[in-house]
Image (tube, rainbow, N blue to C red; front, top):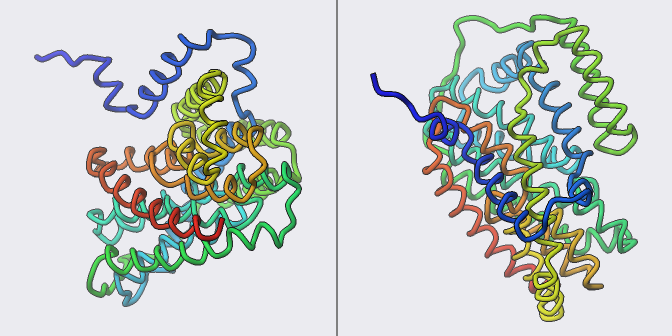
Length: 373
């Protein structure tokens, strides 16, 4: 019997976490660990992710997604129409509930739908387009993503200034996404019927999870403090359905922690700060978009906002810069993790599709952004 290498097995299971951990460890050689590391970690993001993953797992367990899928799919439907629906759901919802929440909610739904209609060959393009949709749709509002909320407050922008810059990019993104859905969304028409009607089970758990989901949205909107939300979710689920806490993807949370450490350490290096400061004067747009590819757009927004007053270039750059590498927007890691948990997952094929589609979108939107900025 051939023994399996546990390290190799773990890497195959959690490749994103291993890469993030290596990046954090290497960066620690340049910036030795200290109490300042705690300042890198966005505890609010981690708590919201934890709560949302637990609550969405509860909604899945109660059959909410199955029932919704049956209602949306029953009858004669064009495959391209189904793809458009799956992609635009996170696009529009991310404007109000952030790109992270949109992907946590709708990527599992898309996987379920494609499995139900036996179209798993479309899983990679659909999930990649959903990820792009959530990252681009979220730039339409100040609350759509953390970097918008930060820069909106930092530069004391008016809604007119904000929309005047980002609304044209959002509308263009919608057109490009719709075109991509029509091109890559599959062919033909499906007549979909189900042998039996799915119903909601565990109605008490559903009621509890529905209330908790509303509380999550209130916390996303900063009406409810994330610490209070986390305490409520843990206590309530321990009483009602403790199994849901085991379904949280804790490795994803650790992946975020590693990337927070990596990006924080990069920002502490004087050589990098000086280089960024010098090239910001030439193009805040291109500099912020490029920095987002390495340290992600939220840390890039925080780091660069202290080095430039060009809010237009910075705001457009960190939003459009959410496209590109898987870490350009950490929300993209959520989609990748969900995909890797599906039986049909092929990480090489996914990363190839993800990279090509993201780079194409990044180039097109940067070209338009140069005109606007």
